[in-house]
Length: 283
Image (cartoon, rainbow, N blue to C red; front, side, top):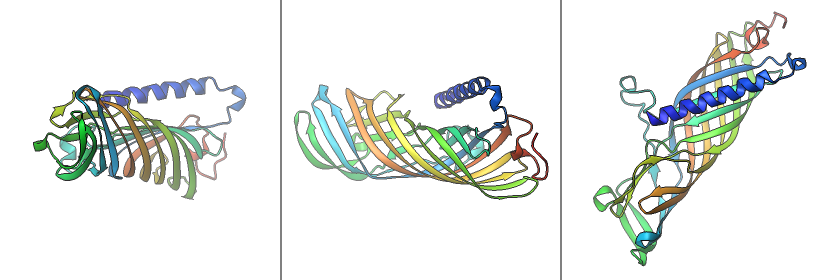
């Protein structure tokens, strides 16, 4: 629920700023007939191998976990309709097209992704443990005192620039097919839960670094106002100063993400040509 409240607050903040920007727009630019959109969907991910750097100076630990494998936890592939919509890996986006041709916009993008270090893998530990040199391969599982979850979210938040490329639109505009490209950067807001050598942390949310992403999507708009969007995305995230027991974790990894979303788009002016037949003249 905390992550859902956080998402809602971010969404409301973006709406307020967007409406403030519109209100301040000079009247001489009133021919800019923009459009707002919102979408909600679900995702799945694949992660690159990474190095996890653990620093716990208070107990004499400073080591790297090398070439770590991790996986996601989709959640939407089992009993989706019998759980809260915000429990599975979800996405929401809210955006605004602002130019005359309605093909350039800005977007606030939140990806609730889950990152779990795979259990029962042999991981090489190299550095210092309890003040002594460490260079060993250790079986990573809860029996040995290890787990690492960003399971309430690795949580990518991005501020995107959006470009829409029309592919096909009927004369009535009741059916439209577009390619959409997005690029953005922003903070990560992970939920940190882990244990190293039998020392669990107090799980928590925090601002924990930054990420940058590139996305391409196929959007099908139906009856002018509704759309389905299938996206693929690559993201690079750097997590820093993640709080653990008596220390911190640093980590960076890449993500390949597939997303299926449904959304709605609304004009900010009754004469917006995106919402009228091509035969009808603009106001």
